[in-house]
Image (cartoon, rainbow, N blue to C red; front, side, top):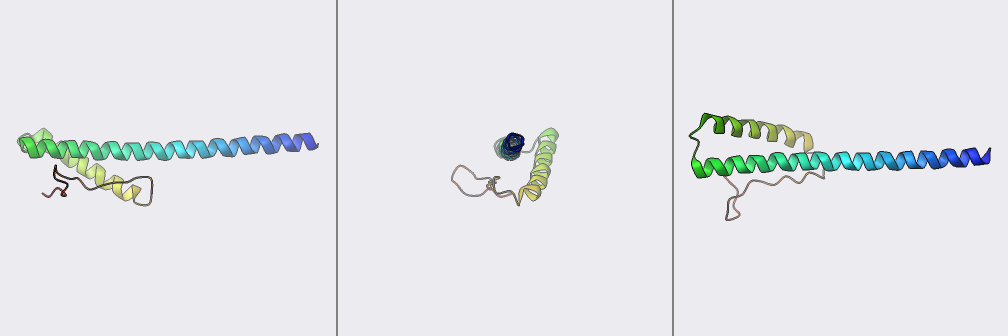
Length: 97
C-alpha cells in the first residue's frame, strides 16, 4: 500500500510539473504573438511613413494591424510577460500621427 501511495504521489508531481511547463510555454507563445503583431504594425507604419498612404491596401492593412494591436493590448494588459513598447522613429522619439 505504501508503494502505491508513493507511486501516486510521484505521478501527481510529474503531472503538476507538466502542467507548469505547458502554462509557461503558452505564456511564451502569447508573448511572441504579441511581439510579432507589434513588429508588423511597426513595419506597416514605417512603410507608410516612407512611401506615403497612397495605396488602399496599405491603409487597410495598417488599420487592421492597429485594431488588432489595440485588442491585444487590452487582453495583454494584465500579462507581465508582454512588454509592449511605443513605436519609435530613428531618433528614439515616439511616432506621432
